[in-house]
Amino acid sequence: MSQDYKIKIVKPGSQEWSNEYGSFRTYSVQVEGNGEPISINRKADSPAPVVGDEIYGDLTDSKYGQKFKSVKKPFIPGASPKAGNGWESPERQDSINRAVALNNSVNLYAGTKTLPETVLLTADTFLEWLKPTEPEKEEKPVDKPEKGSQYSEEMQMHIDDMRDDNLIDDEGRH
View 1 (cartoon, rainbow, N blue to C red):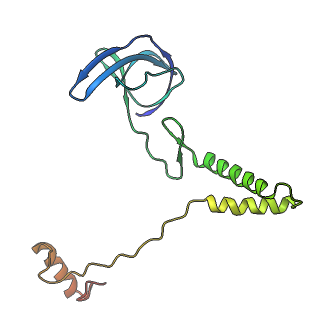
View 2: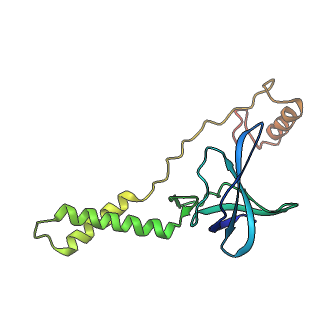
């Protein structure tokens, strides 16, 4: 199962190799929670792994030991990308948005004698502006199934049956 791993040891040296997809280097590393060496393949022109790097993927056994296979981290709705390979939680993003809203409100009223309650109300307004909005759903016109149309014979038979049973009208509406 794919998960996050943090590199704790990078062994010196690497092996170079190539195939039809390009030139690569194989590095030997250890990750937190696993004492065995793990092989990581990277493109030859990519930076070498360093201690502290967070990687996401699967560890698999091979005849040469454990290998790391990088996997794209799944999208988490409501989360935002963070530096590195991962996503910020919605709670963390909300905390960031609150801090940004409050900071901008304070900056707006800096040097004035504005009441703190007004600063906080303005911050709430700014926070509302930062919330994502749902895109408006566009109503698409319904295709009108007609006799002799692009539908297969079998589909046309079902459409005719639905018309006969008064489930849809001649315009294809129900």
